[in-house]
Length: 466
Ligand SMILES: Cc1cc2nc3c(=O)[nH]c(=O)nc-3n(C[C@H](O)[C@H](O)[C@H](O)COP(=O)(O)OP(=O)(O)OC[C@H]3O[C@@H](n4cnc5c(N)ncnc54)[C@H](O)[C@@H]3O)c2cc1C
Image: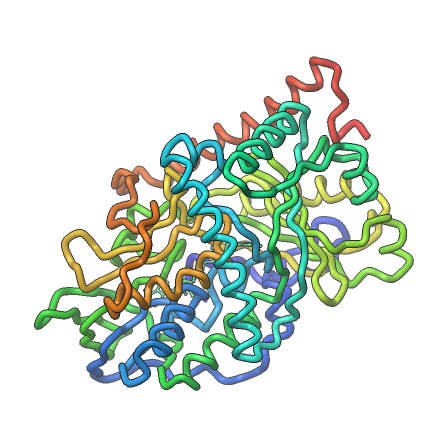
């Protein structure tokens, strides 16, 4: 694990006093394969890819499909999927860059429609890759319900439904009563239902993609941290760990929220940490008590939303809570897990006796305008950065693989998209970044709490009053 991920092992459970491993539930199912060989010595390659998360692996695979004779080396500081990709909750759904009305206002109707449809295509790319490469990652179709926790949010979701309809896109609004019947709980004031969506085991997907890269002729080196990239002979020279060196014609930096300060955009991508709890497998009686089929992935509409879904073994995964920057203290994480546990108890009172067996957190990269970043560095054109997927990373990280390959091979010119850019639009905050992230997070949390309070003052029952 990289130092940013490091959390004390076997922290105590918040609910049961039971020791809870601080590791994603997916690791339990990680095959006990030895680490892939690290990179040592000197190598000369066509393309070096930094980071073996879904972005780096999908880019490598699509590139090798376009240029089977190119030498492609993926360098991973830790193990494949050690970053957000193997720590995520596995909900693969459409959407980019906040609300559709904002996208429409900012970029116009054609771009807003194109962006959303592209994100739907990204979900289909994931499905195709899993099927084509025969990856066993428990993929199943689902629906993503974005739920309102206040009346004001429900009205906003209705406006979103109308904005989608104006673009010819069907994202239906489910009113409160049918939604309560569907979810077996009167928590929410309404929801938007997004499609297409699949749920899967994201670590298995990452491991499967790494195998596919190797089958296609690429190399994946684990425990090979890149510590510097500098121009060299018309390409780039990468320093790898204490002894390795790679000269590459082109480089893709796919390190997202784990980008260290010394790598490109390391001080401009804002790393945010989110947290997850997982229960043990529920019994048939426990599931029946919920009066919910469990087929949907549910997310609420607050800035610091909760989201949940069943995994394929029947565990409930419950994530979210207030996020924090890269330097989250153990105490902060404990507070977030406790808050998540309280939210879980309110949403699932029938499961009050069920212990959490896993909990973990991970980092994702964000930009202040909530638009990803995919493009060459302004002053180093042979080096591309791809990341900051801000919220819908599973679909976008995999789905942008073909676009990254197009940029590297110059075979096709990708359609113009807002994220095809060289700069984040985020000012370089340097040492002020942690303080900035903390203040931003505190302000957003206050907005969430304020929304619930305003509603209570107006006499509208909130989800907490049920
Ligand atoms: C807890 C959690 C839950 C999430 N749930 C969802 C979800 O349900 N749906 C969804 O769409 N998105 C979700 N996300 C977001 C999604 O997981 C990410 O957007 C996506 O996985 C990013 O993929 P990536 O390959 O760009 O980055 P990562 O998977 O983070 O990969 C970056 C890799 O770079 C490596 N690296 C860093 N520095 C170096 C270096 N110097 N040298 C070599 N390698 C380096 C890291 O070790 C890491 O493996 C979640 C994220 C988290 C943290």
